[in-house]
Image (tube, rainbow, N blue to C red; front, side, top):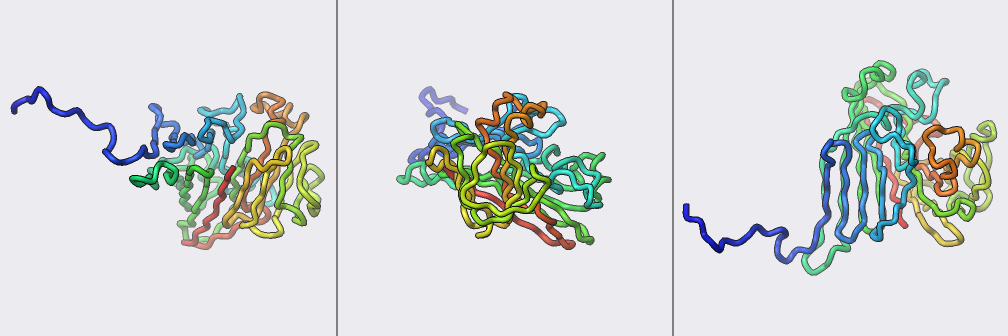
Length: 319
């Protein structure tokens, strides 16, 4: 073969195409990150398929993550978007899940990265229409052996994280792969970052029933916008259904809008001073001032999946 002295170099990009979304896997295969050509980014741990970072085009972090979060060890991640399944909290009165750890095993299990799909920019349109979706999988056979016997049901789950210029979407598909029915709960435990919790209002929950877990789980009805003035732990079932936006405002300006699909409940949580001080992995201790959890899920009661049946649910967060 004759070596040409002036042979062309490899092209870094295809001529005529604008920059495209990028996806990277860490060297230790512990996390997947994606970014758009406009600057937005997301990072997901394979542990729990936990979203630990979501930034806008200017590099501003939209999620709150504890400085003491256990990203590599056995504990669930404090912050970001942990995934709750198949039980919410502890469930001593539900025999099928009573022996499972708090919030189930999905958030501590090792998920498999199934791949990406992209909506790429077209020539002449620029990068504004680009998007990227990351898919993660978990099955009953891949859950830790010590937990399989505590919830002996055959299932598979696909969790998708979709980043676009307008926001972030997370969705889950859960399939009962067995012949016997099972009951489960699911929740996306989203920690949103705010500047000052005392200036936050949450709209879209007016006239909605909720369980006040700080007040002996009493049933109450919301009047007006939700404000945070102390420890708050409420499970709402919004009166207008999942498609009604839940809007988080700060100082009168909307900062987040959450729209749900198939997830009928919304948990609003902030630990405030004393509770934050007693949570070992909540750092800094005054971090409660800069976060509010708006958690989309199905946790009042139980989802029942017959053999072969599938449940789908998700949320879209925009800013």
